[in-house]
Length: 278
Image (cartoon, rainbow, N blue to C red; front, side, top):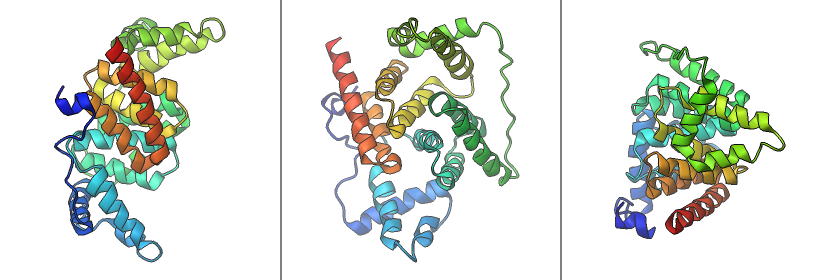
């Protein structure tokens, strides 16, 4: 871990303070990579009523918020697709970012896996709606090669789930399940069997990507602070860094608002302190 990660100071990858025009041009270059178009649609779609919003989206959203290399473009798109699918309020933007994910190298199987993962944290309806958007995106790319994943695994769900839970959350996951034994033991079993035995154990998405997606979703939803803390631990447990935790939470300011990001950072601060004390 580098000194910037230890101290919480800005990474050298953070763009230096620049003029408004420079931020816009930097954002435009990044948005072209994600969107695949010379002129981003957001500029024209807002031109008649709120042109400043379109320019802010480019300048701040891409020219500042996403303009560093603390996360790869693939990791950023995984987080954004997860958050938008979980919130369930921005189908057009979800479609844009599914296309963007494909543009920067996320595979169709990984896109689908992120959306399946959404079922654990935002519910099955959110996952189904996300899959419907992905289906349209895939259909509009005739040359796209995608075969649905069927792991064929139906047995030993509980044992498989326990093993995966331990790999991600360690004792924190055990504590969550144990806390349900006196009131809702079936819910604890579903967490093990469905969330970790069925979903987390699927092979098409690695554990670090799953935890990036989970931290993004729990931050964006704004209603899951205890679970966010568990999964900040989880992201660190599977190879994520403190800098990456902070970056994915900060990115949510652009998609779920600054209050959600600030609350997420507060949760991350608690986790970092716990691990430092431990």
